[in-house]
Length: 479
Image 1 (tube, rainbow, N blue to C red):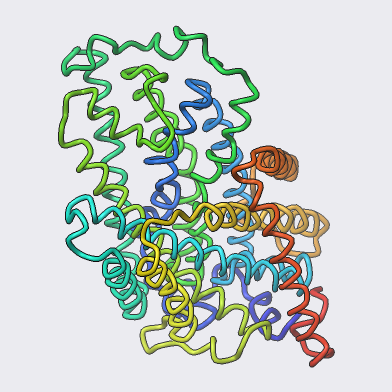
Image 2: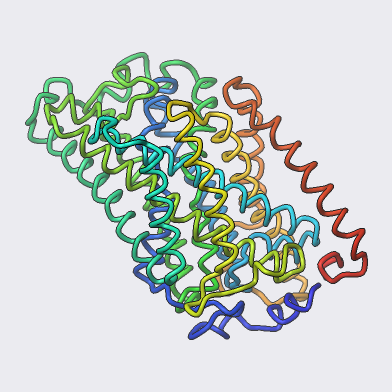
């Protein structure tokens, strides 16, 4: 265990909850911001855009897929919550991997999660630039929008963590308002019968066209990767632990809202949309929200959804700016990254780490300049598998922590995961099923080819660093 880890391990969860965090960060994120970060992390372009493809494959049974996956996400978040209340640190997943699995796995997890957000930031800033063309009709270059968005979000993240929290609060508010509005409109159509969609609106649409599983259970299973992709970034609330004003109160409250968030924003929204519009109307590549607005006779639907997905993309990029700097600093503090990444600004933000990550995200600006029409399918596929790696690490670390705490080797968390360790084993098994489905699907199989290559790069890098400093604390087995 490194000296930094020893210092953190000796803290009780109640200490350091005000003022500066245990890693030198300022605890400036309040309950309002943490709640909206948690809510926004579960709502992204995977729902607004990706759900169209999933509906066309699975039909109404997609509702069940989201419900089961939502239960798994809840188990993952409660496992994370148990670890966070044991030791709330900004390094989060990599820090727990370092303690419970060993320094190599902390190294792999930290750099993988960092890469996940860099890649996600590139794709999302590109998507945001493309969404802007809806209004400008290519009168303004796409690469310029990508540059403007990158610079603005970079500046906001450097000014203060509070400004990051405010941006995320309002980004999330837009997404929440859009979904709640859609649910209320659909409920009105089903009960009162207004709009052009009233003629076909009926709850029976969920089973009347070839049943609840119109294309078979197999097709429903194939949509699990799309479903899980939609939930990526829900774990971001764990990275905020070192900067929450009162993590002992705000983090458990945010995590406990996961079930109703998923029930309302995913399950509820899909039930209402497919009740109003028969599922066979939805197609891959089309937003179910846009189609629903069009069928209702609301011409402004496309503009509304375009604005919502724009904010969703900017929200994801904003989160990427935030998390990458923290991950690099955590690696540097533990001797597994360059020391200059430890530098903080006066406002408590990781200057060098955020700047380095934002610089790599500018690669997306270059791509927008040379090839604005290219898709990022391979990059997005890799983002999915690297994002799920964080979930796997959270679950394995929680299982090991629970065993140690039950033996009395470590203090028990004040926020224990229900049903653990069985719930964590169930969640792990579910993720394995999703990975198998990704291997079967030729469109997403490429991510499974990229993962071993990235693992090889990390393995070589780790052992090269260890060879240069074999007795360094960064390479000592965690106790």
